[in-house]
Image (cartoon, rainbow, N blue to C red; front, top):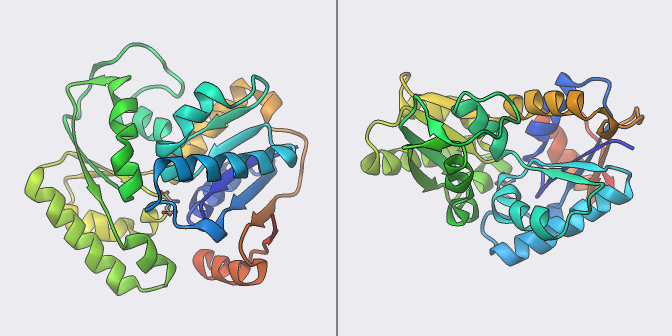
Length: 270
Ligand code: DGL
């Protein structure tokens, strides 16, 4: 038994790296649905079906706790999964709640009623499917009052990062930030709501300016998971060795993942 990390493809490795570093004694099973990536341009039904299939595969590996590292799956599928599909003895958690808890200065897992918070203007950068779901605004409204959110669907950025075209990715980041600033000239905080965007954090920060606090998920998710496992140690499991599963071709996924993380990583067929 281990903790499952689900993603549409390679981007979730940014989350895996952070959780594995924060929790060196916990074994993880990573599942990348590379055969069906990217999710960011799919519709909600499709994302729900694919995410359920991946989570079932992780359950079969003994992962009673699964983290959806993928923001698009967290946004478009998680609520429906939790409400009608996840059995009582399993847990599936997403990446938005830790981000929102950090943004609204809450303790991890604090479910008290919504209240006024310091931040009033928040920019959200995410995939088209995540923006369309409005899940971020919904989760924020459970926790904070009076926060204005302006969301920018960042078409093209994931593809540019995956194909290793940093110059294009930076140019796209600048143009998406400009587009958002036309609608919200002075955001106080910006959420990088996609697994891939931490790799572009410097470009986002430069385009937004130094006075904008940029929130990126990997370390926040790691801290929140560490806290969750302290409160629910039964979900950590006795496993010792992490493994990496893909629905794509393990050889080419391993080579892309090695490039992506800049150290060797070996995937096997899911
Ligand atoms: N993992 C997705 C996310 O965090 C980005 C890649 C995709 O579109 O599948 O939203």
